[in-house]
Length: 243
Image (cartoon, rainbow, N blue to C red; front, side, top):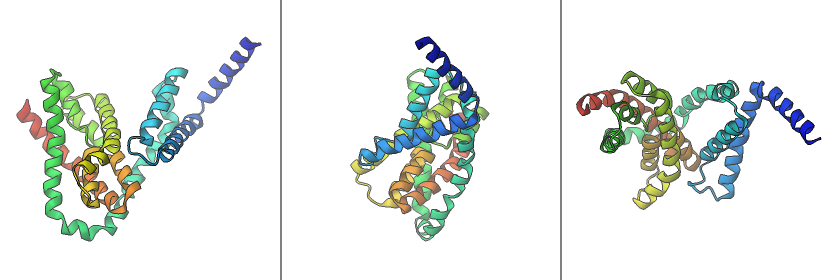
């Protein structure tokens, strides 16, 4: 009987795994589980729901032997929504546009400083640790949203797959530890906090900022877009000098 039950369960899993709906449901369920943990923990930044969702999904895929390509057939529907979600960030930004205009100089200085430091510090540390040139350039755009970061990495001879992993890790760590670091630094202005989160932790940091405060979310969305543009221009120049 146990062998028959195991065989039946395996047949059911083979049938379900062939449906994109299963992996879409898994993705949504994993994030909801992460949100439940996050809320039960008093919305502590360290209990980032994205981190829990990623860990749960990776564990399931490894245990079931499911390839990423098969998983993405269902998850691509969520991936498609990243575009509209990013565009929708223009709404809170439009509402706070008067503050953006008043802070134009501070935004320009912060953007240049944050973008340059995020890239050069990571590249410098990896060089000191003896990383290869290909690894160093893959690490450079870690604070930029994934599609742009992978494009920069590929154009400069890096590894886009490694860059994607580093981008996700940076976003999760930034969203989890960023608020704590800003508290320790005594940064209380919501615009400044949001801009820092968007610059250092791209989309995941922006989502975290939007959960906390609309002003922070607006400035985080602005920082995420401007940082992608600045890094795409500055990193090739920095790499030419560094190399």
